[in-house]
Length: 216
Image (cartoon, rainbow, N blue to C red):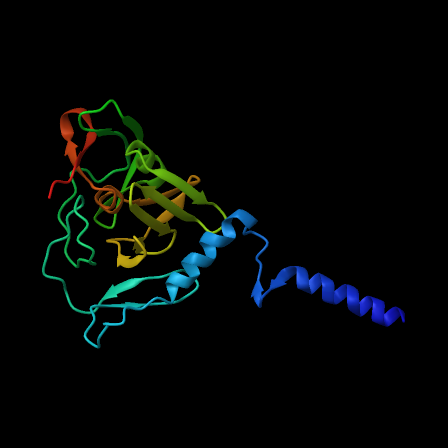
């Protein structure tokens, strides 16, 4: 009888960690589960019209998703324009050392200062801070290091250790991998500004990125 009771306790404990066959990780809080599972679902996403000569393929390893280029893209990488490709060649950045700068929205009093990190031919900025300056709603899931940004009808999802952005549910290449440092998720400035309908220009005289709406 005792053995049966012990077996029942063990089963109940295991049931607490396994739900519908999915193991619940201790570092993923309950409020993060939905977005974490959503990203995991995206990881297996593949366009129906993908073909053999696709430039990019998906590497599903523990460190995260990665797009690689098999054929050199023709356009030159530009730090403030998100071409939705992985460029082999990138232009020279206006500055190459990490420094504190200001980001300002043209025609408004919205601005914020933060550290920018030049890396891999891109300017990396704290995604949450930039999104908030641009007026977006931001949710950061710390355990899974996923940043979910919503602005009007646009949604961007970033994850640390990947160069994949989910742009309105579409799996899209980012020019470089996002990374987590100082409790911030840093992303290329082009992906977050262009993705929310803006383009950033660098003003050397006052050390400021000025964002203005992209006009069609």
